[in-house]
Image 1 (spheres, rainbow, N blue to C red):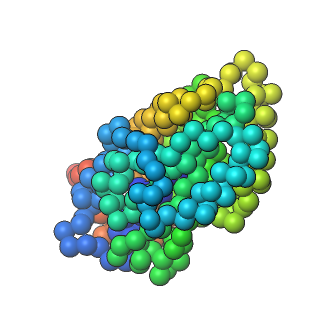
Image 2 (spheres, one colour; image 1 turned 135 degrees about the horizontal axis):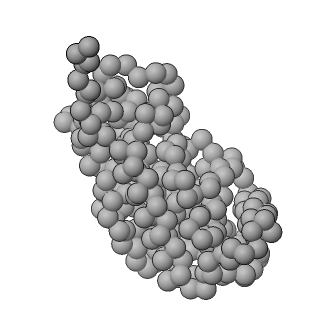
Length: 262
């Protein structure tokens, strides 16, 4: 879910920041409002049934379920983020939630099929694939979120310092993602045996952890002013022009510094 939030905040950000096609009246202030909507308020997550998502790749969800259950993970339920669905109504999806046998890892499998003019432009310049099938594993240890997912090159907004994200290639198998994350949490526990991971026994435990992660991400987005200079320059691949500097100030809600009188 941590990576899911980052990608949902990324879509319009990239299109507008790169100047591919800016919707009429959609300047920096409007982009900031959209980012605040994604990262600001607590998100409403509700149980759903796959039948409500006719465009979802249900075969992927079922395959992920089989492979995780073969590794002793428990399926806890399917949920939709209604907050994000209201912001991106053309891109509704759901998350299939699991926890491992030891209760130290929560897992989310989800299929993103970005639609709409802006996302189509991103696909044309190969900034976002037409279909994205993600498995994301998370362990929470005393306010730090250890995250492993197959989203290398896709989630380009920086996570908060509380999230230690390792992005594997898109085609990484379920088994490889699980093995890598289990190695990371094992290493973390051995390095700090006094720090007990949060236990995930129920769907409610997982949703509570997601809510805590969202608070960390929202706090980070506010701290950087919605979009940081480093993020925008990475997206552009070069230093910012004067126009882009003005756009960034509008996103961040800052005024241009007054020239020195000395």
